[in-house]
Length: 192
Image 1: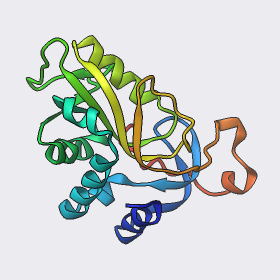
Image 2 (image 1 turned 90 degrees about the horizontal axis):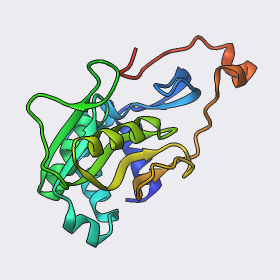
Image 3 (image 1 turned 30 degrees about the horizontal axis):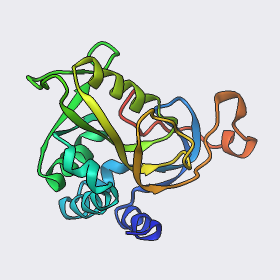
């Protein structure tokens, strides 16, 4: 799958939104990629995960024991990656503000993990998820995402393999352009 194929999947599902959005990172953007909508169709989600698995180096694919993703956005993406790789998929939750494995999910020491996200903007949530996986005893081999909207700027501290990289500008509160500030803000993500 090339970039235009991936964007076509987002457009076809109504998942490429335009307006004024407050991202979960706290930054503002004129475009929002609603991965929940693109992943709501199981066949589409499977196609995207299979295409992403094909982008992972063979030596990393062969070593992955489990896929772990942060809830909420990464749950479906992580599940589909687990299916495509033929391994279990688990997710992290933030019951008190910090990611942790719950619901009976546990990993053995030195379990080899692929950390899977839906969208990476700044990489903060991904780095927090990676830290939680390490705290639980896992060894994060790599990270993957459907979309890297940082344009390759996010540093996750491990090899990072997005299906598509997009340079979508985002702005701090004090950097929002006047034309964007004139549009009412919407917070479409999973975190309040």
